[in-house]
Length: 487
Image (tube, rainbow, N blue to C red; front, side, top):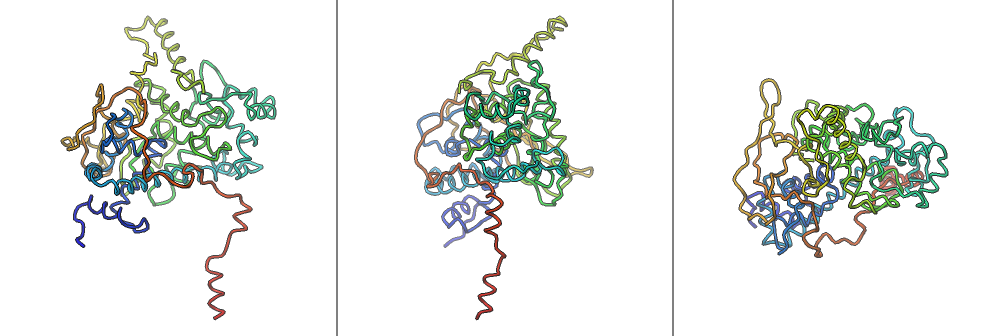
C-alpha cells in the first residue's frame, strides 16, 4: 500500500483507520475543534459551516455560517484542500465531522467540569483561602435556587436588594416561576461584589466581577492561574496554544455561560433555566461588545479583563495556532444598556452643542447588527509574530489568491472577519468568502449524518459526589499484584 504523500492524503488515510490510531496530521484539526467553543462559538452547527465549502445543497448558506467558515478555515492552510477532497469522499467527511464534533463537545464539557468543581473553592470566593462554607454540593439538583450561595450569584443585579431582604421568599418564587427571569436580566455574578443597582448606570462594573475573571483564567490560562492570575505550569495554556493575546467578546460570553450553567441545576447544555435561555444570554453578552462600533465601554472593559489575565502575555518559547474569538428573543435592546448609551450620548450632545458630532446610531436595525462571531470592536488585522533582536514583533500577513472553490452566492458582501490574535509563524491565508452583514435566518439543511449519536451529546460531564468518588477509589495495580503473588 503506497504511503500518502500529501497532508490531505494522510488525513484521509487516517480517517479510514480506527479512532484509537492517532496521527499528528489529524491532531491539528482536532486541536482547532477544541478551540471552536472557546474562541468562536459553542453552538455553531459544524456540518452547516463546512457545507459552505462543500456546497451540496441548493440553498444558499446563511451569512453567519459563511463567516464561521471563513474564521475556522483561516486557522489552518490545510483546511481548503481537505474540504475540496471531501466533495468526492462523503464517507471520509462524515467521519471527520463526527470526530471534530466530538472534540468540540469534550472541550466544552471539560471546561464545565473544571469550573463546576472549583465553584465554591476558587471561582466564587474573593479569597481562595476562604472557600464557601458550607460547601456547594456537587449534585446539580442542589444548586440553582436550592442553594443560597448559587442563588446569590444568579439573582439579577436589579433584584439584589429584594433578594437580600428575604432570600428564602425570593428563591421560592424564582423556583416556582412567579419571578420570570430571562436572558436580558444580567446576573449579579457579572458585577463586582457590593455593586448597587442603578438603572442609569447598569453598564458600570459589568463583566468586571471577580467571578468572571476567575472563570476566564480557569478556561484560558489554567486552574493554577485562577487566584493570582499567573500560570505556574510551563506547559502551554489554551490561550497560548491558540495565540490568544487579549480577551475577546466571545471569551467573555463563553466564560459567563460556563459560570451560569455551573451555578444552576441544569443537566444539559443549551437548555433553559426557567425562562432564562442560555444561548440567548451568550449572544446578548457578545452584542454588548460588538453592536456599537468603537464603543469606549467595550474597549475599556476588554482591556481591563486582559490586564487581569497576565499569563496571556507571558514570555514563552513557542506559540501554536491562531485565535480569531421567551418574549425577549426579538428585543432590539434586551438589557436596556443600548438605550442608556443613546440617552447619555443625546444629553452630552445637547449640553455641549454637539461639538460638531452626531449621536451614536443605536436604532437596532438588523442591517447594522454585527454577525455573531465579532465586529470592529473585537477584531483586528490578522498578524504573524516574528522573532527579532528585541523580541517578538507583529507584522500583517498579505492574503494569497483566492481558493479554487467557487464562492457561495450571498447578498451584500462585506469585508471578511479578521483574527484578533497573533499566530506564531507566517502561514498561508485563504481568501475568505463574502459575508453578508444581515443576521442568520436558518441553517443550510437538516440531514442525518455521522453526527447522530445514541446518547445525549449535550449531557453535562460533571464531577460525581465526593462520597461516590471515595467508594469507587482503588489503588492502581493492587488487585493485579495480589493475583500475581498468589501464583
